[in-house]
Image (tube, rainbow over all chains, first blue to last red):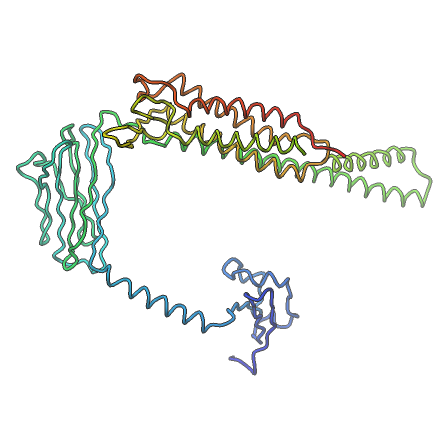
Length: 300
Length: 157
């Protein structure tokens, strides 16, 4: 159908910053016969994603939020992107390697040491991973794993012979290894070094392995649990208290309204005919109910 | 007016003492070591070194309850200020008093558990540090404040 004539609309100014333009355009919808639905202006400024288009917005009323000056926004975006692009080249040559900080494992179990990296370049085919191990209290480190040229080479002479397995995915920048059947002698620091040519400048990252007979509870788990439970209980109690007060007030209100309605009915009946003897007591009950409600409001 | 100022000053003092007790790592001190609840300071080669403290379950309970005591004390201060403006005349500050009582309970639990089950790092020769003493002092202070709030009535002029 297209636009027939100029766009007609209504300016809704709430404050100087957000101005909504209510677009009214002729649309062939069955609702077009009805007069436009005017809700409160604030309703139209809520983000359209939170409202379903079915009930609240007939087809021809659509909110259009436009900032005051699109030019300043665009220039700001352009400036920001230029600045960012200026900063970025200095960092493109650094590769960032992530491993864990500490790993706790049970004696005799397997542990997965994860290593991944972030690089501004695409993952090349010559990506290399190498893991070295330094025992606790020693200053020398030995190499236990190396991945290069698409092939993984594991330790076959040292303390980890036949216990290291490559479980990473170099294509996804993951160079994790699995160490099986742990012993107390495996306590130490494992260092992962990854290179992604031409991005080779980076610091290797280390993870400390601790082998326990019984894995102790991590520091802070019980602390956090206690704090969370108590605060949660407090919030729950407050919410329930206010809910009960609200419900009780509502029930009293509805009770007094029903008694009030009955009193009115009885009043009109009284005017028509002689009053039955039960009436004055009912009226008294309604008035006392009302008085009680008022006194409760006072106490609050 | 002076009661109000006095009560607020006392409340802020109790919060400060609670924070000092909970945050400072000085529940157990020796000549060269100051330790608990969160870390261990050792005096080595004319330098203070910070290492982590062994975390048995009892120490974590002490950590949790001391943090909760601080939280509840601060909450009760805010609720007190709110109730100053919203409470009708002649009413008691019950909500404030209840929160302060919970804070007092928490700090009592913290100090008691620490006394009953000292962590292994404090088995050496030493004495209880100033954080521990402050914990007990703030217990007394918060208790007095809680009772005060439960008795105090808003002035009805």
